[in-house]
Image (cartoon, rainbow, N blue to C red; front, side, top):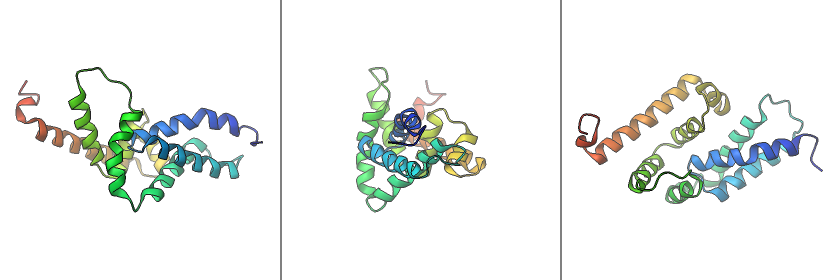
Length: 168
């Protein structure tokens, strides 16, 4: 039997953390495995003196994922597009080319920028992301700015200058 309170914590956080990893480009099955491994680690220490066990599990899940696929980066990049298809929220029909283009460009971002972008997309504040990833807020802002700038430049390059704000 799980220690008191862990089962409530598990049910409340598991799906959200899996969804976060998926938004960062992790396939659903791998995300579930990584979160399960992280949850088993926190269970071994439960009740924990950690002030934010959800953030700890999220970070541990990312670390478990990176450890698992560390040597197989190419396979990960090829599977990332399919992962996003499984985990993304539905968008209006008529925009598939744009969605695929943006997802492909996100896949090309460095892992840390993808992770920060996924957390920001989940609605996390700069401070929350910094605490969760063990970074300084300025580093988070920098990663987010670089990710957005890289995406903007890549989209501008693909779409051409006529589709920019002055070309419509």
